[in-house]
Picture 1 (cartoon, rainbow, N blue to C red):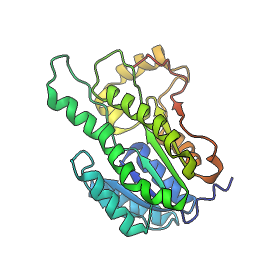
Picture 2 (cartoon, rainbow, N blue to C red; picture 1 turned 180 degrees about the vertical axis):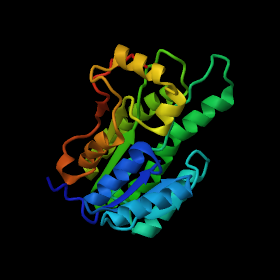
Picture 3 (tube, rainbow, N blue to C red; picture 1 turned 45 degrees about the horizontal axis):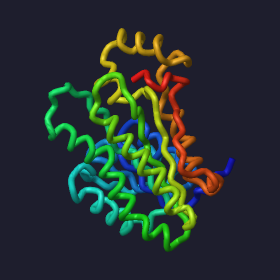
Picture 4 (tube, helix red, strand yellow; picture 1 turned 120 degrees about the vertical axis):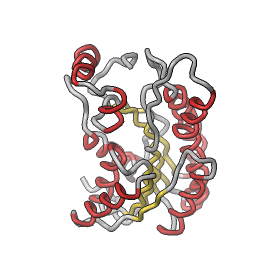
Length: 252
């Protein structure tokens, strides 16, 4: 299927690893012009080289901390300057934040800054251009919003999902769609090193919670995000789509 993404201008955050990296490569394969943003310049450079080697348009590398107060606006301005506009925004930057019940304010505020505020501020900075063009795609990567263990990311992801649904209704008349992807356990540095650092913890979690019998791969999430970024997905907005191998929704 031709997703008609050739020459569409896309910004992917959290592009250095995992889902963000896979999405950047998928969009480049579709012929999109992309800016890739993250804190790790070295990882972005290796992604740049992979995309070029595969025949994709050389991506623009943007480094910065989206959790910083002015980080999202700085990234938005850099993307607009480099690409001449942004048609597609993939808000993928974020991360799990397992905590204890006595965690202080700093832990909660850092999680909300990364997992919610960054996406909101980046989106708000890019929406005027999308409205002027009467076209835009915003895909927010969320995750588990209800968890059995304390995780400062879960309420932040719940806020992101709730805000996304309201925003979708607000901007639909401008030809802009807003959707969320809720990944389950996807093989990545974060999942394998932070949430499930041992083979036993992975095996037990899979046996209890994932009918598919395994963790997913970033490349199994990226095609869906690319589709939601395309003209063909014009009538899909305000929704959240889980990609979790059939995992129980309260498993986390």
